[in-house]
Length: 315
Image (cartoon, rainbow, N blue to C red; front, side, top):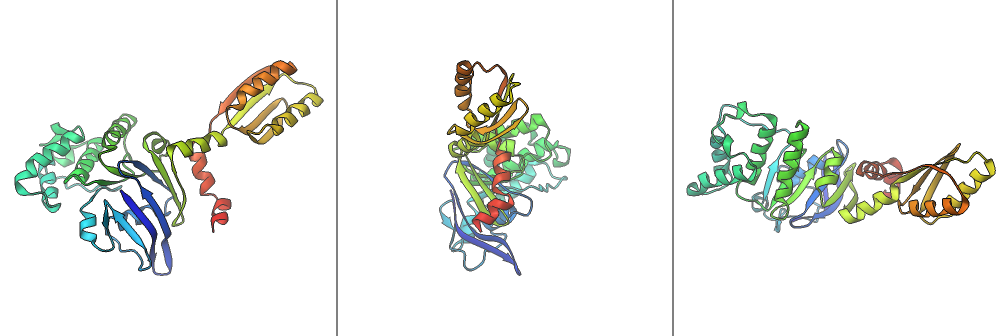
């Protein structure tokens, strides 16, 4: 698991991380999302001991180890797939992974078995004798993930893991991530919010070095239901009738906003309102031309929680 309490990181007068607190439960896949420069990479660098936090930081625990007290032990509990993956093209896959195993403290008599294990874990055992410079982007990412799995660390940090992959490779990589769920605690950074929505159990939104939102799937799904809209079109030429429809919609408890143009209404409301609209239409003899849901997405939630108004409210 990852537990961060009041983490701050400064570069001179600029604060990259400002009193950041969040946690990643054991065995969960958490999406760590934010704009460029929001603080995602800085957080990853602290978790891997590439950067030391400011002295006022209270606690950073990785895999049960206090990073501030024992950074070497904490670092050994983390496997990393960086966004910019540098692989020495002149080496074969097994040569590279054996070298990396030694760096990670895998004992000599276990190295070969460990290389085979991680290649099987990423569904790439046939690549064992291939040169790294002959691999496709998809297999390069798999070898990077295999590297992260060496030594079987309990915590994995994946920084833009599907960057540069084609749709088929993205699907395959998502399946690999899903297979790691439960056995490892994953913190996944991605700008592809649809991907986060599909594979993550939790989300953590960071903006300008501060945590804006931290929620599990059930909670953010409920938020998306509330942010969704209904599109209603009626055969309703009478101005008075249109006014009555608008008034009735505004009175419904699920509705937070109503916009009307001609015979079309855009309603921000829970999708359960559809049933009540149907019953009301029967009672009032409204002729429904179209009634459809326009569900919100994780992108909607992200934009809401990183917008200027929300930042001002939390400052």
